[in-house]
Each structure stands twice: as C-alpha cells, then as structure tokens.
Length: 139
Image 1: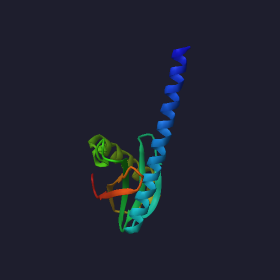
Image 2: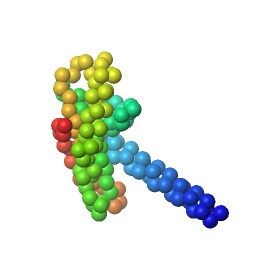
Image 3: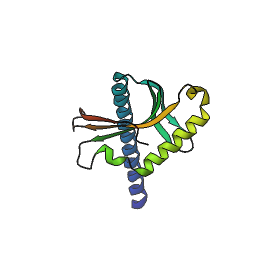
Image 4: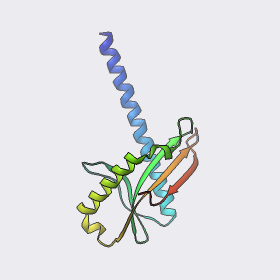
C-alpha cells in the first residue's frame, strides 16, 4: 500500500514538473518570438513537429528561412541556456529542418538560404527578463 501511494505521489509530482516546464517553454517561445519580430523577422510556423523532433519557431529574416531553437532558464545557478544546446541537439534540429524542407516544399520554395539560430533567455527569479541572446547561423 505504501509503495503504491508513494508511486502515485511521485507520478503527480513528475506531471506537475512537466507541466511547469512546458509552460515555461511556451513563455520562452513567446518572448523569443516577440524579440525576433522586433528585429524584423516574420513567423512562418511555431512548434513544428514530426517523427524526428520539434523546432520551436520557423521564421523568415529577409531572404533567409530560419529555424529557431529557444532555451529559457530561470537564474544561473544551474548554468546558462546556451549550455543546453550541444552538438547532439543541433544535429537533431538540423535533421528536423532538413525534413521540413523536403516535406513542406510549397512553403519553402522561395527561399534559397536556410539557417539555424538560437534565442537564449535568462530570467531573474521574479520571472523578469535578465538577458536575451540571439545566435545566428549555428549550423
């Protein structure tokens, strides 16, 4: 009985944690979208997903089609958002982007140039923006 109750409590905690992370991720994507739009980018699609993975934002920057990875962290106790983007993550984003180019030919036919960018956001403990960094052409 004790084991079953403990497992249920663990599962509830895990689900709450996942939901909180999901909400923070969505919040980060909205911040990144607003930031990039102020720089002149235009939104094509958000949260594109296929069997390979997901891309947070797909945008245009003049004649570029840009695949954007968004990373958000609250505080810097456990590292920076930039540290969350490693070679494995970039490789996965590249594979998803390449499949998007093949599967969505109608949407991308007017673009000759493609790139992967990242927007890294660090929030203060009160959820105000501490810093936003935009990195172009990561891959």
